[in-house]
Length: 565
Ligand code: ATP
Ligand code: MG
Picture 1 (cartoon, rainbow, N blue to C red):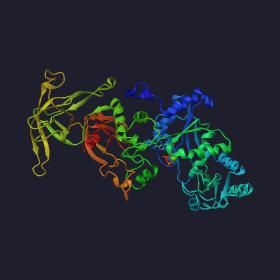
Picture 2 (picture 1 turned 180 degrees about the vertical axis):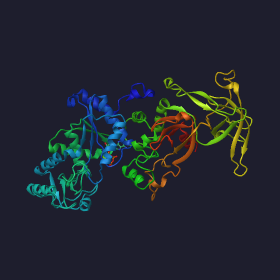
Picture 3 (picture 1 turned 135 degrees about the vertical axis):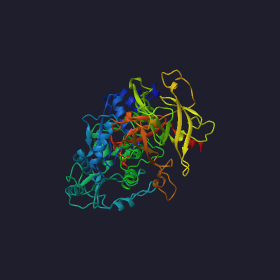
């Protein structure tokens, strides 16, 4: 997707996966066919790490005129749910990808996988074992110490066939028996030590209902599912490298088509947790408002926050694919959305921390309209009118009673330009004697300084954004900060967990004012609030009660602060 990224116009060199694929195409492997898949387990919502994998798999399918399947690896009925299936499909589509008619489920292959298990049993390569899960774990040994063989390992083929058939028929209770591969207990690779292939779970599956009470292990389903779908390049994350010999063993012993597995480093982001278990805890324990809380790294959270599919695809493209684990700075993701919204988002003026300004020499009454450019990056977005009136709001922080020399905003006796309007001069101000807070600033304006007037080009050092107190509309604005205040929440000191570095300041609610042009905003409309940042209309927003989420501030102020420290 290099073409979506203007900063990256020169053709980038191939990544190591593309090199493998191009070599396979060149040598005519699989008749030069390219077929990838994205294989989520429907046990949670997708996050930005999955987005990386989606962009990679679908991106390769597209680039090499191939195909990409969406396959749910739904082998564990206890943790999986249709809610997750639906959300995953929505997220993949939203990211801009299409599996066409290739939507599959590992559960569609349960019968086939059962047949594969029978093949192994008949070859004397699998046996029914009565040990408990704990006993199996205890006898596995350690990487430097061989395990011990199960006492059930030498059951006859007939006995195994009979027991396995009975397992399927529901004769035995959960946990009483498993089917294991017969490979060896002294392999240096722990995954090869007579691994479990099937377990008994009397639970209702979200697709197969109560048809099955034995379920294949992920390891016994994944590689074979790839094989059944004739996937050419089975791309997965690094932790599966050690599973590869086992997948290859299954494929060889069963005697079926062999996809090529290629591992890449999973995406890790600073200031972010990505484990589904932890994300689920954040939701269940109420640290966030739900899977789509705009502080979550989930795709639905990013979408609600105001991220665009283009910005996420561009991010995936920029980070590329690595062979070694690494951590990407989350500010790179923020950079990508800022870049995209800069081109896409209309400008509006909004004041989040209002201070009233009264222009004493401006006539009372309806005021006038000023012309403003919607997006200086995109002429086709046109212009709009902004009402100007005698009473305005500016930001509290744009006024100082006793400023330092380099303060180029409003202060007693100083002049500023109000963007798209006049130059004003501060004459005096009113201060609450009890709180010390400035409550009102009085100015005069120079009528000759607006656009089209003789002194319109007169220069002053500062330009401020503003809204008309008379016409501005109220809006709830949700200012988000990072959810964690430690760079690596997964790596906390002994006795602490990622929950100990949750940022208590990750959400600030303010009631701001926004120019009336934003009145009819629809959910997910995006704006740049001038001088403040990018904002997106929240899903709970309505015309009576506008709610904006801050997507990202205008500049990367956070990183700068870190550098100063
Ligand atoms: P788990 O298996 O622990 O439930 P998972 O994050 O691996 O969690 P899956 O649903 O199995 O979830 O993942 C689907 C696909 O997304 C897999 O191919 C996986 O390798 C990939 N994936 C998951 N997390 C990341 C990540 N952080 N970066 C890149 N790819 C990822
Ligand atoms: Mg997984």
